[in-house]
Image 1 (cartoon, rainbow, N blue to C red):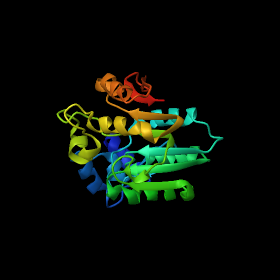
Image 2: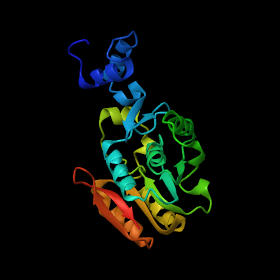
Image 3: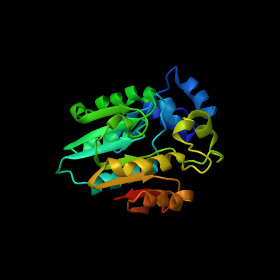
Image 4: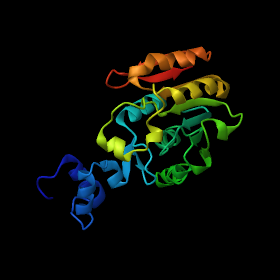
Length: 245
């Protein structure tokens, strides 16, 4: 292995080339030097034991999202049929994890950007998941699913205020539509809060990632819609997950 490689270069070399430099590695080093995220250069990321492809360049799943998804799947019964929705699915990482861990669940993927549909289906197939229990709907929020009521809704929607400065690799390469949501970051959460109650089955629950700086305001949006909402911390102790019941 070449010496003096950065952490991301070593990651790319190991994941993409098996630790042995190949002709494309120098071009990948240039991509990394330009700030492109290593996950895009490699083309996939691990997520709860799965390999999640990123060919359509959706938002890269974060460790915080992986952490609370695991917490959610541990809290949900595996022995009863469930109707599960991965809302704002992007790569479909959350829904794929649900397919893998909840053998009796029908799992729906909701995504507004049609360019991500193929990569969601690719991630279902490449991980050997049950395609007969997977349903991909393209459209705004709950629109593709009609009157279906869900037992579990999991969502990592855009929630960053539009004037917030982010790392160059995020700003220059990741999809802004999956990051930013109006001046206060709450624009899409307002829509979700309005629509969510009529799409929840009795005794349902929803776990929704939010901006820690606006967690209280996000909770109040859902309480005004008539549901019980609390805030749970992520693995770092930051208020991160809206829990709606």
